[in-house]
Image (cartoon, rainbow, N blue to C red; front, side, top):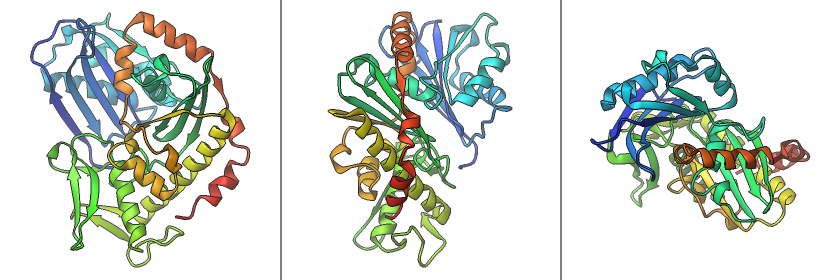
Length: 363
């Protein structure tokens, strides 16, 4: 992963004294968004992203408290303006946070409300649940809609018109950047697109046109596709004449990174094939997560991770949008009811999964 960095962005100078702190917590990042609760529609005041974090059960409370306090200080948000903190996190981190995250440790008022997004199942964590609450999720889903999230796990949800059917399969971390040596989420400073020019020059773009600090999953997928087209890796994923594929002078894709992409693309295809076969007719597919931006879906289709007919409908992470919607008690109640009635079919997907996975490993 990239070195530890804080990225701050201020959107508004005027806001009420009733702010919500919305926290999207991964295993290597914390995104903090300050939302003005006095405005009914989505209105972000400021945002900070802490990348290069190493969040474990024994460190996550201190690191999240540090991220929130740093975000308040750098964005000029007074602690007296914060009335609630809402978090979405992987399961093991969420459990640790529920036990140990304190308003006092974040220099907030002791009566500040701290809440956590409920899990859909043992296989789909709070971040995916938050995305499902977002503008494209279950609260607005039509029958036959499937939502696919690329993260440290592949999370799947399908709405059959009556209930939500879900599944979650662990991945190697290529699709959220956590398993890539120079990887990071798709935020300011991430290299997010690669292009090979006719003269052989490798060009790249940086999200928000700033200084680069790491490689987003979309660019990792671009790199592997370029390497495959040019014979730098063979069909077995082996780098044939070098140990690293450099992007500029500071970043590279290693053999280990290629293996992570290879494993994740095979696991995604195997799980999608099994899931679609199990749920039946998929009329619409929505992809979310770090690998679903820029050319990510097209590159995944090129590598064989997703079927060509299902490669449209990608967007970035919708965690904070979902958290915003769940600030409404009415929406929370409706969402919780739908989650409680959902059916998890993860164990059914594991039937024949290994065989399909092995068949899809070659590039």
